[in-house]
Image 1 (cartoon, rainbow, N blue to C red):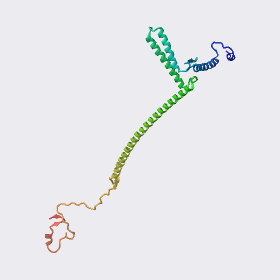
Image 2: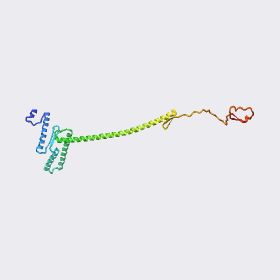
Image 3: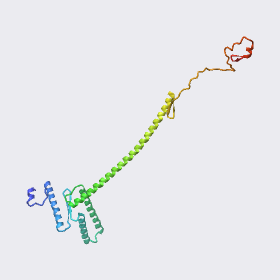
Image 4: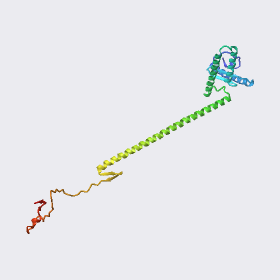
Length: 254
């Protein structure tokens, strides 16, 4: 159908084949219907609930007193009417059906709220509803930031604890290496002392001086030995008194 025919002439009530024209018409008439529902609720003080699903499954709604409240009121009226007509036919079945309808309505409400949180289907919302949605998003963002900060602080504390543990382990390894180095230096000093004639005493290296050499000749003494001067070894010429005074010759008894 041409745009000129849709503008002023009488519109034939049948499906619009042109996809773009169909979408434009849906958008205009949807907004007009929502506006009329709002005007009816304000002018006549009526409780109005309007639910629209597009061909792609998107939900558009308006509720002067809230969709959920109006639907519950509607279900209650319908079920009460059915109960009055058939009071003896399955009260339990009716209760289960009401519960199912209530849960279905709640599910649709939650799905709608989820789409609103994602920034979808915001067209039918009023200023008050948009303000409430903004507050909910700000609260959710605040909670997400607090949780992120908490996780980051926990990670920082964990890293600090690991840093302290590694510092203690590094200190222990350093002390162990220093002890092994001191022990190795001590052994090397002892070995060098044997080679160069030094002694390690109390951490100090002292020079070990060898005892001075003593000039001596080895002697062998057998029996009684009496040192006799060379000039006294010859007998004197005067008398035989020399034999009586000297009964030994060079240490050997005669």
